[in-house]
Image (cartoon, rainbow, N blue to C red):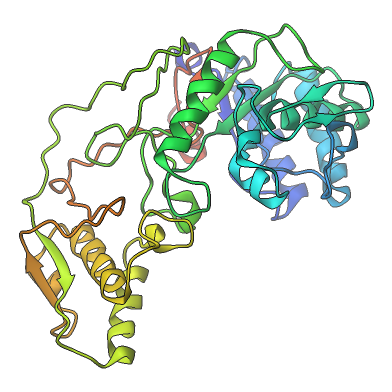
Length: 375
């Protein structure tokens, strides 16, 4: 029964910095356990984090897996081939573009990029998706696994808190990517074949430990879509369905009252509020990075106030906070109002929403272990 609604299990996330031998041993132990319980049709794989390739990648044919991980990769690829399981990779186009100083137009599959890369075989690349996908094809070929299927387990575009991360760019990214995927065009190295992807992700994850990981959602926490996206892949200019039944807290915001002029004391409260909430929008390139000193402090105070669901004691800040009913948002900088506690949508599975073959389950390793223990 369990095997009927679960096809794939991803083991771990960002785990290659840890004991790689123990990691692969864990996969083999899980494989044996599934076989013993008659669940051998369920596929196991270890998702590769963003760009597990050598640096200085100037064209796909240059790509090779990092030397320090090659031994475990060879074992992993052999296991995947023997069990007819795809290699799952994470692809973060905007991070790659900024790291390698490409123009932002290279992020979109509309053939309008100012960056045009010609490889040794004459293949031409005008977007980061085909570029990175074929880089992995080349790296697999050099690692002795040229025919291993690739699934993009996470791909998306952030909407805040990073240079180039905004709503209009995210909308353009998906508007070009999804029809490209559905066209089955493939890539220069693997033409005419389907490209399976998981969109990352449906909802912002404001409590992620790394600020850059918090604003990748198609939806805000109140169930409202941020931008137009046609999840059918047909390229229609439409918003996705808005989540129903989500109630907002009252229109109340917490702001800096300006009474304390001691900048050091104010900054202490600012840092405390940011550490206890999410101030990613204030970072360079963020939607609120243009605010003045008082605006920055007010934004931080309000984020903490909303994280605490507008609790009465959450806007004190040693006498520096003040609750207001007039929206303090400025231009593109939105001062949020949280939804009623307990109603935040939980739409985003760990590895996104797959296009082409919709997954039948999303399961964590400890849940699987619990299930096996009950059999």
